Image 1 (cartoon, one colour):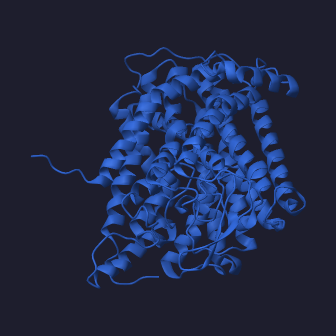
Image 2 (cartoon, helix red, strand yellow):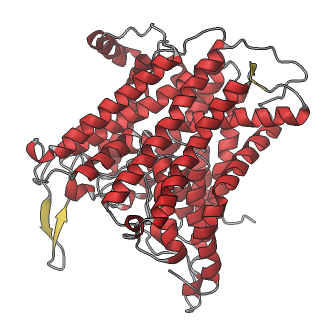
Image 3 (tube, one colour):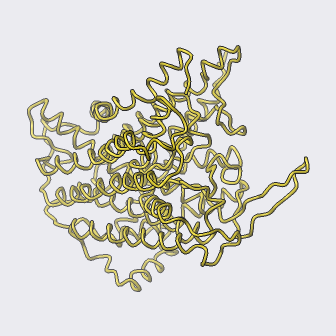
Length: 569
């Protein structure tokens, strides 16, 4: 006798199997790309890469100190923010605006420019009613590529720090950035864009069309270059939807196949980077250990969120109606893959769900917050996931070393005061970007003025906004209204959450590259075993719980308790 497999879990298992199958080939390819070796894409992109170096006067062999690497990244990000801001403010004067949309307000343009420069892609606007095609492509779509490329470069720099010794340099930012764009993000985006077009996503620059429905009403059909933007939105850890409904819109996500491909695209590059790390440090088992830790955290999120959504709402059950939580779900997908979609979107920095986050059950809502509050290290964003996990690995090795009375080492690198300080700065900058502005929003009238709900759910709306902003996620509980305060406050959280972690990470890469590497002895803590994976996961959970559990208790936790008592908000 064969037991029937629940299709909900079958989809999750199929997703994990396909993702696992991509890790080694993609990871090996990325390692070769950033090592400057020839790959099967070199005949196509090699001439373009050399042309970019010639025009921009870049010497890809000129190595950089970590300070120069950081300065290059920050300077480019500032220019990118200013360029995007200018396009959005001048949108009404620029071409490719067939809908004649007006320019964005100053505070909204600033929030949007910062948002897309940090891969947050927070949207306090409806894209189909606000953004011209030029703004979508030349401002937002361009930022999706370059912001992801910058994060990818930081991850590669940190990997070099672990792999090198006795050297003051960690690579060349401009070369890493260019190679990441040309050889990784661009070809993957092209392939996924073709797949999305095949599934029915629009790809045009035509004006919107008004059509008659079967019952005689008039409906406006949006168009635009959606498929190309959708691909980099997902692959680059971005998440900003072309339209307000994001991946729940039939235009952005027309079929079950496109939905599955979107989930896969969010994790593809972050998962592959674990194998890239293993190859760069000369021990593939180290990469698989990080992949295993990420997988454990991911599986736990799916295992908790899925039953919570399928279990439904107790208040609806009291009326004699049993079933899953269908409020806020896209009818084409239902609640079956809500747990998987939710966990993938909030474990990554994409945040593009095919449902309404404001309608989640409190337990699923808690998982969404926790995924981000743990630093989105399972699997995280493009680059940010792996360098966040490596910071936690350093902390784990340090704590384990103290427990056994040995000087902590990770991959032969002795971890001393400077390395620990930089790793902790990278980790603790994240809660600072969440807790301080959220506390301010709770006590000022402007922060409370546009909450859509009262009680713990209202607090969750507020707290989720800053969690998502600092985590570069961009998802939101729809009850939070737009105002100038949140445009500036969330923008501040985005900047701190992104760059206050990146600078210590690059400094950590420089510190590690300059140190000698020690040979492994019998007393060295193994970091490629199941024991270390367990310690790493435990450390991540402990740091997240100590930092955020008190605040979470005021939101989704107390809301769940009150929901069981028949109260809603």
